[in-house]
Image (cartoon, rainbow, N blue to C red; front, side, top):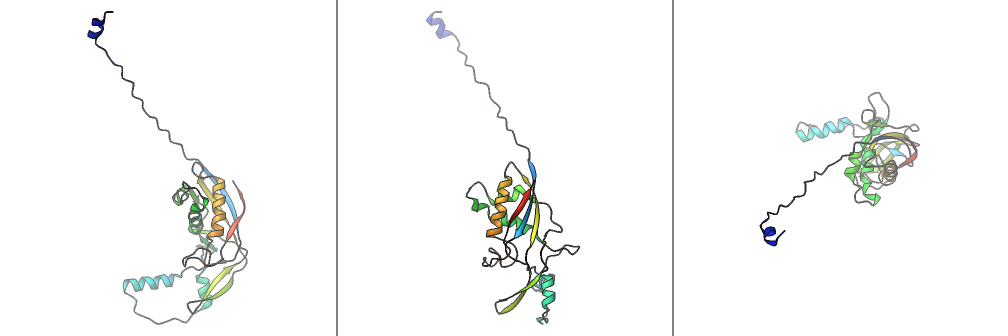
Length: 215
């Protein structure tokens, strides 16, 4: 072919075909783990009684019109401080155990292992009326002074509980959960005067660890 013919020849460019990016999402990989935990220190319960909550609400809404103090009944205070299911079994709020795991997520040293990941990836499924059942010796009374007032709390020694946990194994492993529970039992605890509580944490009550586990 002559050079002039090559100049006059219309050159067509072939555009590359557009490629469609295919996104594949992994399905849920739900597994179940049963964990038995044992208390390493006594558990102190401190449930706020309904009458106290009602009194606070009354003051906030301006319908409280009495400042009279009732005569204290230690036995009634102790009874009201215990968490009961609707059929009278003793337990502890399930969220106390889950929050402990969430709070300890940052302690594992992995920036991708976050509180929100733990919150979304696990479910504790064996609560009754929102409570995890607690087995223990017969409760005794723990007496202490707080701001010049005597506080009576039910104390449970040799306590234990079972957690049945469903989790998405795509995001969190069985060993991760075991580690988190043991961290939570050491650093956070449950109940009053635990290592981490509303007053900033100063006690050593309500600590726990895993005794055994199974799928």
